[in-house]
Amino acid sequence: MTSLLNICLKKPFSHIYVENRAFNYDETHRIIDFFKNTQLIKVSDYRNVFNSHNQNFNLQKKTPDLILAVKKDNFLYKGSELCHGYENMDFYYLTNMINCLYDCDYCFIRGMYTSANIVYFVNTTDFFDAVSEKAYGKEVFIPLSYESDLLVLESVFGIFSRWYSFCVKNNNVNIEVRTKSSCIEVIKRYRPVKNILLSWTLSPDFIISSFEKKSPTLQKRIKAVNHALQAGWKVRLSFDPILLIDNAEKIYTSFFSQILSEIPVNLLFDINIGFFRMPKTYFREFKSKTQFSPVLYSDWEYSDDHVTYSSDRKEKFMKSTESYLKEFSHLTKVLYMI
Image (spheres, helix red, strand yellow):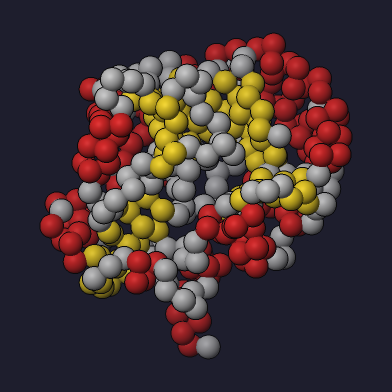
């Protein structure tokens, strides 16, 4: 009981685990200096902590620790068919950071990892080298943050600022920075460039309050989106994943109406719309960590490689929201993942 109480009462990042080789990087010492009064623990390999058995993901999510590590290989991964990419470009993604401060009931990370602690790879220049090699003589599209929300932690790690400088010098490298944050101050510090796409995941307020714990309200996100558009940034909206919970049609029609009235949709780069889906390999673990959430209560359809809602349920939703979806399509490009 005492150990459980200590976990519940401790603050996020109260412990920092550092790989021995990470001490060779100035970035590591900068971050250690940033966090005062934290307990520093040296480890030979970050995976000994991150992949250890008998971890409680849900408790760690409340107060995660930080792990500073060095990425040694596999800097780039081929983009998944379950995600939206750029047309006519090679599509990859990378993981400068693993795990997120937000706590969303539907997140695939719940099925992917046993730990909710946040891993930051301090050797950013090695990522740059890998991207430069892959992008030689062609254009590439690389989302930076499928497994984290980088903007919400920009004041600590400065990942966006480093990639911004890299993209200014390498205009054939197109990056997407996906976020739920309302961090307008981060955006204000930089002028827009054509090869950086700012992508906001927007959800109805009911979905946010019920299933996107710790994340900003819809109104705060809309304010950030409008600021970015007014400043001239290339902006994508992502209504993904759509959750087919009770009264989903009513919840989302109201949400779509709000978006059309409060955001100049015609200024957007595009809108992505996708239903909840997850690789089958992650789904069993995901269910064990999310067993009390209404997100799980559905008639699932299993394909060879992933799980999603039944075709009938998705078709019913599309018909009930058809007028709003057509309006979006009249104003901007809409990409579906259904």
